[in-house]
Image 1 (cartoon, rainbow over the protein chains, first blue to last red):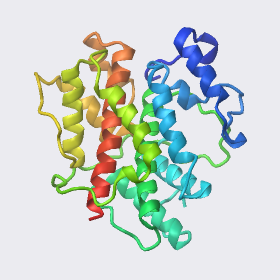
Image 2: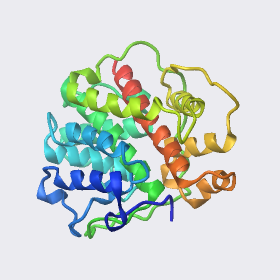
Image 3: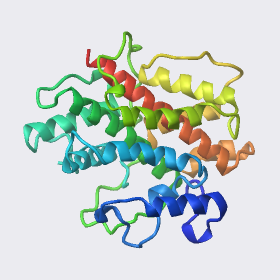
Image 4: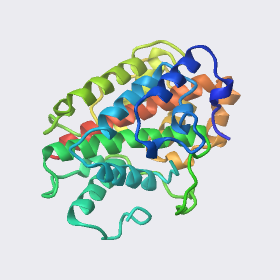
Length: 88
Length: 211
């Protein structure tokens, strides 16, 4: 269960606008969710729409640039997830 | 490598990345320089692991469904894994390396951090300050503010789970505060505040430990 979130179809107002901006971001196809919608980790921040661009703006500076290569960045991310026992 | 990150597999550089990410996640005060990573790569690894730990915590707290079919399913989450240890001593001295070496990251994270800590709702400013202090203490980072007001024990318990045992986040973790009238917006604010403090503290402590 956990805390609530708002999926794209149910979103309105500032949250919908934020979701639309997140969908419009340039992104490698591999990161596009198979369902074609907003990534679940973005949706997970739905309870605070103002926070979303701040968190994912930071992500862009870390996951979209070196010196670590893309595979190396994924290795760091996946290792961190594994140690935190998180499936994300 | 990822399923069992403690096993010695991969190239020396891959092992170094895994080692640094492991320490940032579990014991940031033990991060050391490694020959396979220059200073820029080390700062990138520290910041990336600290950042991704935030995403893990939010994903655990909210439990949104996965976006992808997972071909190699990881082991099931074991909530009985004990919480990470507190830092044995406070980190002292100035960081040997700085996030300012990645100006775009420093600016973006600065805006995120300021947003979380410089407002009055849903959490009060005093509650934010308390969480920031607790998380700093647990991870060995310096405190920038004293506690102001009476601490809510259940808030402290939730912040500790977020910081040191995010795999134990569940409805049971939120139940005491919900029983006290907290809604999901306020609970989410508490999770975000603890998690953001954790990102900042892990980066500071790791970059100080490098010496």
